[in-house]
Amino acid sequence: METIPTLLDQSENARSVNDWKALEEISIKIFQTIQKGSLPEEDSLKKIVQNYLSSIVGTGEFLTQLSQGNLEQYQVGLNKLLDFLGQKPHRFNSIDSVVHAAREISLLALEPIPANRNKIGKYLREIARPDISIIICKQILDKTRLNYYSLTVLCGAYCDLGEFDKAIAAADIALKFQADSGRTFSLNALVRAHTLKFKSTGDFSEIEKALAYGHESIDLKLDIYAANAFIAAAIASMDERQIVFAREILEKAEPQLKTPDISAIIQAYKTAQALAPTAEVVEVFDEFDSKGNLGGFNSLIELVHRDEGFKPEIQDLRKMKIRFSEDSWFLQGLSNIPCPKCGTIALHSYRKHFKRYGKDMHYWALVCDFCKTASDSIDYDKKEFTFISSNLEETFPVADLCNVCNGIPY
Ligand SMILES: [Zn+2]
Ligand SMILES: [Zn+2]
Image (cartoon, rainbow, N blue to C red; front, side):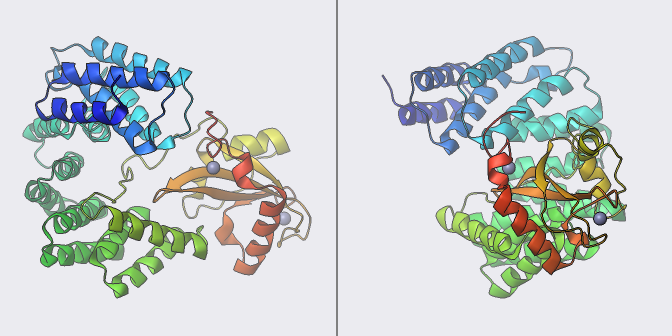
């Protein structure tokens, strides 16, 4: 029997000539090999899942020629994959976003309005079909020339294919015609595209452009997206001053991170860069759907209401209201340290898993039963918060409690 690496080589060959039928057959062979007990590395598994999904998208008529093509066939293929992943629980969460993208494509394709087609374009990149993504973006741009969502997705898709000049051209148009509030999207896209072009060509003027756009984006609006794009550029530049600045930016953009977290993140980036100098280490967050699943299952508000019987007061700051309305929060426990505001031992800590820069982390929400408030860690004095958080961590280690960390599906 062929080994997984051999089969992966065959997959690459099938891919290079767009032989989707062969790619599907090889991918299924790999799944059968896995079923017999040989689990691949995390990165390989991601690739295998992407290959399979790419193969069932095939020539993609069901996405590009709306009256034609067979969406049902794609859905049948997707269900096969979901069945397979369902029987063989694995603990690799890097494939979650790929599987999520594949599901979204099947749902969005049912209602092919332009907004949904834009999202399909974005998700196609996730399953390694930037070629189809480009076709869709161009179709939308034929009708609405300055659709900046399409233009930034197009920029990313060209980057995936290593066509950096086309990528930069698309983001340049988006930047030129965008209203002020939206400019950061295209600036961040330009930071990524120029960083990648620098890594591919070694041309220093590219990384200078990337850093300049990065500074512009941060000046306009400092958030995790701007910080994320900038850090990758700073580390690629290997310029210590830019890396120091990147640290400061990260501290401001993600104030819930502790100093060791930040050092670990910067180190992780450096390692990724050293290991794969030309590979993309720019993690792309979804800037357009950052609201998450509003009103989802186990939102903080719902949990507090259910467990503690009141609706906590939340300040309209730092997107706390939105974050606390998202799903998948869980109770960490009651802190032995009294609430700094009312002096009572009544602080309950709730956490929510998230992943940044390849690192698993957890948001904070501290709920005081007496003050009837909920707030994140920034509301507390740094020293007070360190007391509270280390006490909680000692009594209720979050990694033991978090379902995501333990590979348990919700
Ligand atoms: Zn209190
Ligand atoms: Zn976790």
